[in-house]
Length: 107
Length: 118
Image (tube, rainbow over all chains, first blue to last red; front, side, top):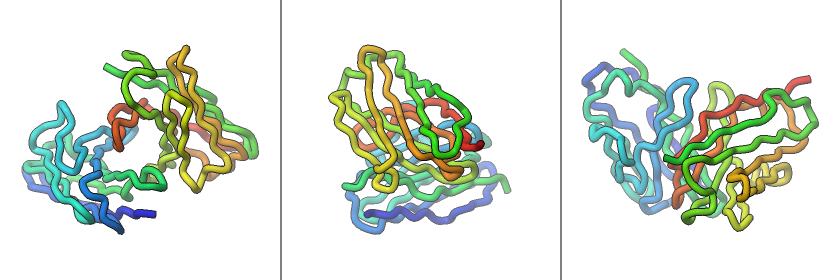
């Protein structure tokens, strides 16, 4: 089974900061990785799929990169509405797995 | 615009079966090559995939839950359903239904809280 880890698990940042979140897979997964944003009390929202393809309607300040075992989600200039928890996710032969999440909080 | 809505009891007794339904609107559940999935999230914790179904009835389940899970589809009602048997307090969570596009979840329901308690 392929496991996903995320770092950091918690991040404190200010509006306007550049933020990078890393997701690592225990085995290579090519580019089959997605990123989600979840705000309290809400369902997760798809941000990026295929490691770097922005979902329709998602602001361009979000970007994704990576392949194989290491992936990153970058927010180029953090906005007030971006404070949330971010999850990576992949599909393997056993099913779908999510990373443990990275909470982005206000400094 | 596809929309999903979960429905079902918010309280289930231990050892009983949890039953939820997801109603899809804004498009036919049978159109396109999509799977339909259930995901859950205990309070303050991460996301756990439960299983998925294709409109043909083909299913895949999380190995950790497989012995207790059944997912079914009713294309005439544009719905798919989840049954989780022999529930315990550990099954208390917000349950989401979602559409699977390729290998990611592109549309989600708002989620429904199910509490397991006597």
